[in-house]
Image 1: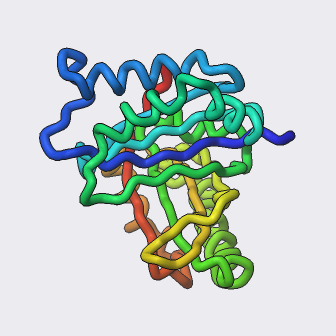
Image 2 (image 1 turned 135 degrees about the vertical axis):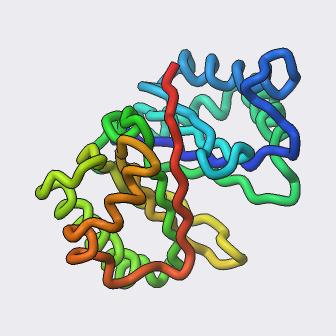
Length: 220
């Protein structure tokens, strides 16, 4: 049984401040982090808030295996835990939760960078083996060039992979390609895109559905 990473995205209700532990939502978040730290089968957990949008929260948990996570979900206390997490979510937005087999695993080095770029690209299931794999190779080629030339601000740490499950993206069965990319800062990423190396190796294709954010990831 191979290790996997649970990848979750929570769009919070307006005005929710999960950093304020005097609020009910702050208490829920603190409990989620603590539970994730000690849950059987969890190797490490991480979380953070998007630099671009304070209402967007990303959580990542490295599990011993997919089966280990499913075993935890079968515990009697899990429904209450899940309901508490969902209570923070904006009902007008879409949350996400799936598992990824990252290369390399664990994705810790990329998540320990000062800022982590979180890229999610969505492909209809029937396009994964063609367009999806081509985009993956193109992105890794670009990042490899940045690393080989020591582009300032790029940590060189990358971890990526595909969702094990299908997700419903805009009513289409899809899979998600996720990449964690380490940077010194958001500005460092912006500056890198203007470099000669980046421009010479820029992506030749982009998915129709892609989301990119930057997060200062924490790990309790």
